Structures are given as C-alpha cells and as structure tokens.
Image (cartoon, rainbow, N blue to C red; front, top):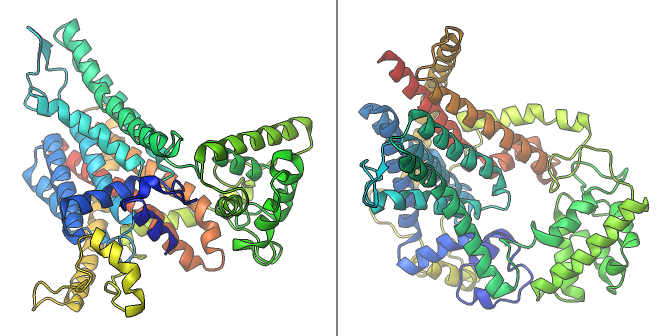
Length: 531
C-alpha cells in the first residue's frame, strides 16, 4: 500500500537527500522506529515483542507504585503482554505505524502514572541538589522524567493528529504539580525544585519535537513535522473546506464548486498553467472531477501531485511561500465577500464542516465503535505471511533487509511443532479469553463508579482520584473516537461494516490503552477502599 511504502522510504538511507514530493507528507515518527530496528540489527518481530514487553513491565510497575498490590500488578503485566492487538492482521503484525500505537500508548500512560506516583515533595536542597527519594535521588530519576517527555515527543510524531494528546499530557503534569504543592514541601528551595522537576517532562517533550523540526529545517528547509497537515499548504486546505458550497458533504469535502471558487479568487493559483486542469482531470479525479469527485482530504494529495506536475514540488520553502500568497488571496476574498464562508460547524480546521443533523448522526456510530474496543468485534486474525512471489521479490528485498528479515527465508519456522496455523488458533482462543476479562473489568469499573458516587455524596474524598482519572481517560478516548468518526466517514461511505473496521484500525491502538489503564485504575481503587 502507498502509505506503507511512504513510511518505509522515510527510514531508508538517502532519505534526507530526497527530492520526492511526498518526503514530508507524513510525520516521521515511525521511520525513527524502523531506523532503530535497522541500526540495532534486531529482527522486526523481536523488536515488536520487546516494545510490548517494555510496555507490560512499565504498566505493571506503575500499577504497583500506585496501589502496592502484587496480584493487580501481575495481572496488568499479563494483560498488556498478551493483548490480542499484537496479533491483529492490520494493527498487530503489519509493519505500519498503527501497529506501534498500542504499545507506545501503554508506555506513555505508564510513564504518566509513574510521574503521579513519584513524591516530588519529599526533597530539599542542601549543599546542592540532593534527591531524597528512591526514584529521584539519583540522576536516573531525573532521566526518567526526561524520558517521559522524549517518549511523548516520539508518540506525538507518530501520527499527524497527535495534537489531541497534548492536553492530556499537560493536564497530568499540572495535576502532579498541584498534588506536590498540596502535600507540602519542607522549604522554599524544595518547593522550587519540586516545581522544576514537575516541568521537566514538558520541557524535554518540547525539545524533542523542536529537535525533529530542526532536522527537517536542516535537510528540507522547513521547521515542521510534515508539510501536508501543517503550514501554509494545510492552511490552504482549511480555507477550501470553509468555502460555502451546496455540494459539500461529509464524504465530498472539496466539491468542484469549492475548487473553482478557490481558483477564481486566487490570482496566485491561476498563475500556474495547467494547475486547475490537473486538479480536476487527472489523478484521483481522472478523467473528470464531476465523475470522480475528490472525497475527504484527497484534495491535499491531488494538489501535491498537481504542483509537482506543473512547477515541481522540490523546494519545500518555495512551496510554503507559494501557498502563503494563495492564502492571502483567499483571506482577502473572504473579507471582501467574493468568497462566502460556510455556516456549518467546524470541530477542527482540518475537518469538513458539518450541519447539526450531520454531527448528531455520528453519536450512534461513535458509541458502537467505542464498544468495539471492549468486544474486539472488529478484530481480525493474521491471514498471510510475507510475500514470496517472484514478481514481488525486488520490491520486498530492500524493505525486508531494513527489517532484518532474510529475503530468502522471510517466513522462518523457529519451532517445527508450532506452525502459523497453531499461532492463529492460539490468537483466536486468546481473543475469547480477553473478551471475558474485559466484561469482568467493565463490571468492576461500574462498581467503582457507583462507590465513587456514594463517597462523594457522603463527602468522603479518600481514594477517589484513581476513579476520577479513569473516568477522564474513558471520556477523553470517547471524544477522540467521535473526532475520528467525523473523519473516517468518507473512507467507508458505501459500507457500514467497512466503516467500523476503518475506525477500529485508526483508533483502537490509541484509545484501548486508555480504556484498559482506566479499568486498572478503577479496580485498584476498589482494593484501596477495602483497605
């Protein structure tokens, strides 16, 4: 698939000398993971096992630090390590960034829990900085805070819409800061140190993201994570979405009428010979846009191809400058009334505006999609090996070598008694087990919520924070599921079942860890209450 190839190309030697039009079309976080695999010489399957193992260990340690219950910590370890998502056909075994979402999110949430569990207030400054607690009394403790920020930067760079994680990250840091100050500090200097340590993850996250942008600035001339959903080009797309058109729908974000209005309002666009003709008669729109209207965000890919076919998409700075002028044209047209802005509601500038009925129509699908994270009814077992057909050999050779897979034996059998079919049967049984476990965890969570309501009614505030955090995680994940439902409708306009699968593919790796961690927090709160 095109996305798979694009992400693989970003990890190959020579990428930073690339002149291709798609070189910054997607974030490069996953290419960092592929470069790590290639650089270490670790087989890709082993690398994925190791990151799931690290995720399981960190979640278990975090649960232990919060609740000090060995059985719950062990359960968390086993639950994460054997999570069926690791074996899903699209989300688990496929070498694509979505297969990294779940373990990466488990690690991020575990590190945030460890931050909340660290008693930063138990420190003071004497003869220099002395860290008195086990976690923070050495450089390793501070390094842990730095790692949290850098890991967030990595997760943020995995996907173009990762900005949704920023509020959660900052809220946890602010919550930790509030808890630290509330618990009291021994001196002003200790308070200053505690506040500074609370802010270390935010600082290292900023430096990590800034570092990635600096690399792109050095090699490609622009300080961005990608140039398709950021910067002036993204601004152009957002303005086209806002042009009033009776033909705009949740499936057709940029109808011909909107595109025609944009070109009519922008002398800069019209100055490029053949640009509008390419947009409306080539690529995804061929042979004519009236027969094949551009669905969803496809105008962005169509415009990249059109620019490359006319003036060339080589110099990223030049492209940004070009679209800055286009945006100025469109802004002037909106201001003068030449262009009329849509009266629909915009949840995000990067999404198509919708009417209220169109927004309300997403509630039902969103709840169904959210339920699939518990039932895993969109789970699909792996159905194939690495391709070994001769016609695909050359295409696969470079990629297999990059992943430390022997191109001549891409599907090795390490154990003669355990075949691919055996693995499928084990994964299917594991799926059944997890569905039962999820049902039990959901019941426990309901009990925890009921107990929380009772405690608040009696003004008993002890041990309520874990349940409140769990509720926040569930609601936050639900909100993201709603946003993705807003987005994916165009990808599956003709089949509701396909829509559910596409939504599952795009969200489960990010949202299910939030749900699972929330369930663990709720169960842990029950044990605290009993004590």
